[in-house]
Length: 196
Image (cartoon, rainbow, N blue to C red; front, side, top):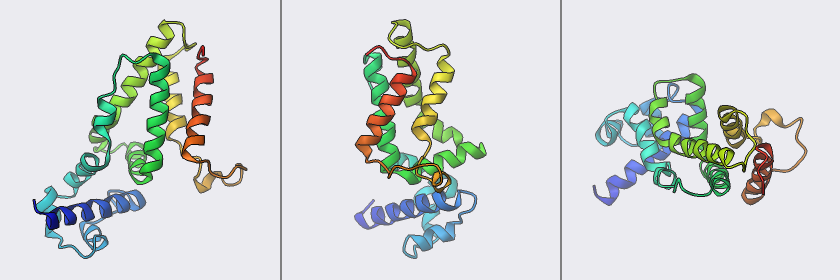
């Protein structure tokens, strides 16, 4: 693929990501994607991706840091592993809020595209469960239910506190990434009663 084709493909993916995040996958047409990509020819979706459904998968191939999560050393000490998940999920949430919104939307609607999302996202949650279990077994964490702990941590990490919904009950200004990581780490580690 030459540089011009690569540029067009990237523009199409960026346009699709933006539109899927704001309108949902079902609410976005191929024509809208092409218009948002600078008036690209509609046939380019089929040429580069084989259709809109495959384009959805290509978003994750292109933008999701799969290798970063899949290649994490499962033998890290449990405390270090849990803190790694907190840090990396929060960094990703801040770096690509559109992809996070797409993931949350697809999960909420329980679409057929969840399988593609699971392929990329589950390695990090499986690692977290492993570290929680090992930490519990070693007496480092006080956890009664691994499932409940896992779901609670995932909810805390993925829920966007900066949505307009919460504007009437929050008083702090949005936190920086590093402050957010510190606050989430403090809250989660205390929630699992980590023995520091």
